[in-house]
Image 1 (cartoon, helix red, strand yellow):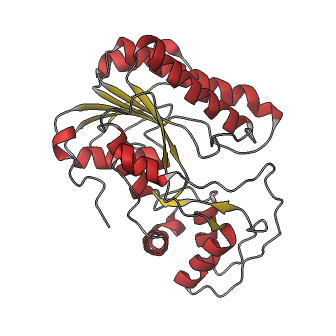
Image 2: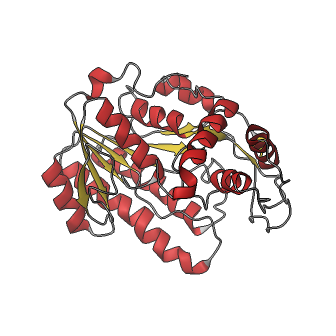
Length: 312
């Protein structure tokens, strides 16, 4: 497996970088890699403190829903590069989520792009979702908000030459992910000797290890001739959730069988598989971790940490 920082040291050493959503799963992993690369990293989130961001990161507590807070944070940090991961994430098709998702994900991105443009950032990488594949009708308020994020990013680039591009991570997993998510939920249940309760498991996804996503984000921030574009971060391989769960059971040597069909299916489900060839051509990036290697690394982390409720 290739290290996320392989070949990127000169691109980040001594550079000022800001990560929004630094207290989150992917944001935390990204911050750690940037610190290892020698960047001066500012981590922005609503809950940012020295205890909630990785070591070596300067925490800034700010809410991207507030334009003045966002402007002040970027004016103080003066970042050369920005990774915008701050978002509200849930795929529930709940009408009460329409405005909260729009305000945080779409509105927050607009505020971030305005502030980054004013701060003369060299490049902004915004994060969309595999829920927003070309030609797909959004299946949730979250997916709709991410579709709007892509549209606003394209508009800011076209009208005002803002140096922004979008990436779409696919189904992420890895050490430190909150246990409400599918893969850690399954791992922790098996480790406790319990039978995870799941939907039918027929959903086909592109499952990608967090280390590969981090490397994709880093490549997106330095690749030439990609501004204004949208790029998938996935393996290009589809796999049914049922098969992922069975592989986890095999890695753990689970004593119980998963209970498929115990939970309802998500509506408007379609296979989600990345256009990996385009990302390899344009970003110079492709996934390195196999599913089995990634699951083994993730299971090993939860064996050591899950019972204590600690993050990566």
